[in-house]
Length: 160
Image (cartoon, rainbow, N blue to C red; front, side, top):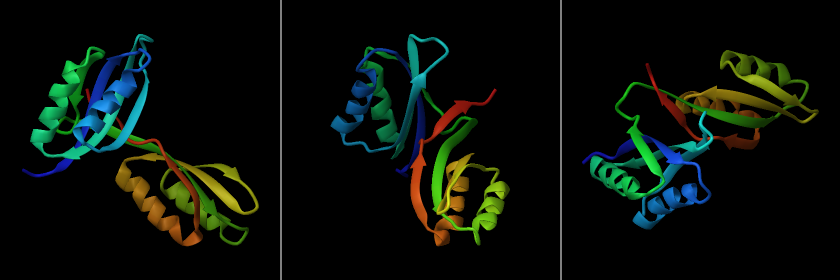
């Protein structure tokens, strides 16, 4: 079976320890979480966990079965094969000076990013997009020197 990336949206009861139980399930089974994003929904009693995991259909089936056994799990949606919107937020601090600052800002504008901080030695950029877009921007600014990079991990919602 072919191993591919799967995006799972997991609606859970918003109780202390729920995230730990969900993450622990992956750990106990030896499945690596590529990214994990969690936040409260419009209903403060529920949270939405978006998990990205790599594996074949059999692994995904096992993960889904095990998640469904957890008391706090309300619903699991596999967004992999459905039409969905997927994004991640990234902050990247790039080494800069007066000579190259405008070039970095122009690149940021092309990628529809936002300059959120400038100092004498660096510029911090906020970029939202799919992983390919964010990775392309990272490659573009690498020659300037990346000081720090923070990514939220993928979050996704089904279209329609």
